[in-house]
Amino acid sequence: MLVDLNPILLEFGPFTVRWYGFLMALSMGIGAYYFLKHGKRQGFDEDFLLNLAILALIGGVVGARFIFVITNWGYFSAYPTEIIRIDHGGLSYHGGLLGGVLATLPYIRKKKASFGALADLTIPGLTVGYILVRIANIFNQEVLGRETIFFAFDRHPAQIYGSLIGLTLLLLHNYLARKEHGPGYLFWSFLFYYSLLRGVVEETVRENPIYLNVFVSDYWGVGFFTLTQLITPALMLFAYWMMRKTKSA
Image (cartoon, rainbow, N blue to C red; front, side, top):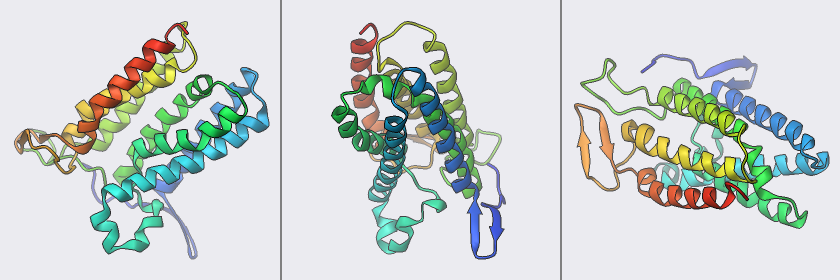
């Protein structure tokens, strides 16, 4: 685990730029750029894409923060002013995905556009965002790994595991994008493999509360089952079903 890292990138008088906020904004910018550039190549109207990107960003941030606050209500009920301090970290990836979909789906349906084709365009941004935000978690000293005696460090570097998961998903997307598939296949395959890697690798070594105590080892620094692990099978089954539907649609 890396320690003694300054979470503040720059200070301008009363204004402070934190690594978390900077890397989050950078990932959003990269995702929006890819979405707009390749969306126009596929024939979508630029204004439509821009409106959609704005809705997705707002809905994603709100959803990500909402789910994180709800699942950590014991802390936020004691410190309510921290609820809006997203620059301090604390965003749920699952909540961000859900918020982005809920915010954009009505607009997509109104314009009678293809949700699947548009969702496929978000994957590079989602994977790069996961890579960068997990790096930002290092600076904030959050998303900590479990303490372990076996590992070379005192804790598993869960943030680095997370970044590597993001990189793996990006490479997998680039591979699958070269193959023939129906609209939406890339998005649902991303959700399937993200859920698998997050549930099996990252969540196993993260210092998260255990909701169903099946196995916890202080020596290995692993534990089952967190809340995310409990919902993972349902997410994977749904994503796999959608993959089958869109593979050759």
